[in-house]
Length: 107
Image (tube, one colour):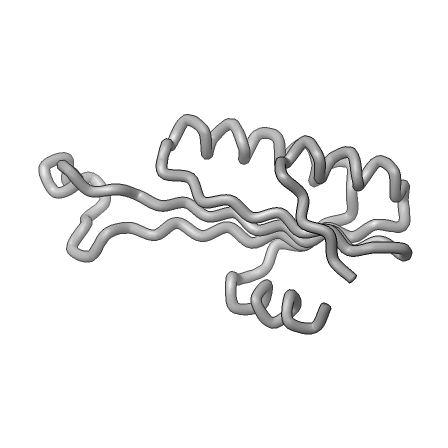
């Protein structure tokens, strides 16, 4: 069974509760609009960069899942900072989005 976490902070709490027996799987994806060129300041006008983060925390008792899509770059940077802290405390692995989807369907 899998429990959906509402925030990165909640995932952090779940990881602390599980102790050293937890495993964090991380997937991050940045979707640039079609035709968007990095460094092309004029090309980005009016477009939205979507940044997605998915986390799967596997523990002996329970699995926990968190996903969020960010359209505000500052909020995304803040989330990445929190994720980095979590990854320092828990064994972790970064995977492609397709691998994460396959892993989620196993649970």
